[in-house]
Length: 182
Image 1 (cartoon, helix red, strand yellow):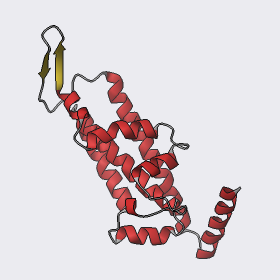
Image 2 (cartoon, rainbow, N blue to C red; image 1 turned 180 degrees about the vertical axis):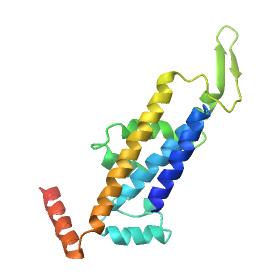
Image 3 (spheres, helix red, strand yellow; image 1 turned 30 degrees about the vertical axis):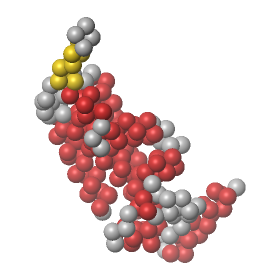
């Protein structure tokens, strides 16, 4: 429920930022939304998903936990494990990380113009981002939709596992592990 709540909240904030012409903050919300899907998907990478969930609820950091192969569940590792299913993920994640942590992305968003002859840079401090081209806005919206689909996929998988008995769940896990080993 925490992942769903975070997703609903991020969706609301993202929509408000798009409507307010604030792409800088919309991109921050997009990165947060991707983070939710990635970290929720980590439960599929561990031996005991229910123990993993209990640890997360207890406040343990996901990036300090390990997957079934002993690798830490860092953001970089989660992106790597999901790249085959979501080929857009590495580039988008890398680009958007600059919007979560203060970086050159924020400086670039404040540049209003460059005059090469005079070596002058002009800045515009504004709550709106009117200088971004139309494709940037469309790309952000499409990425948000893709990230929502990623999270929905794992939420649906979670709902399906909750319908299984412990024996059925273990049998499915064993089949998965056998197929993975081949």
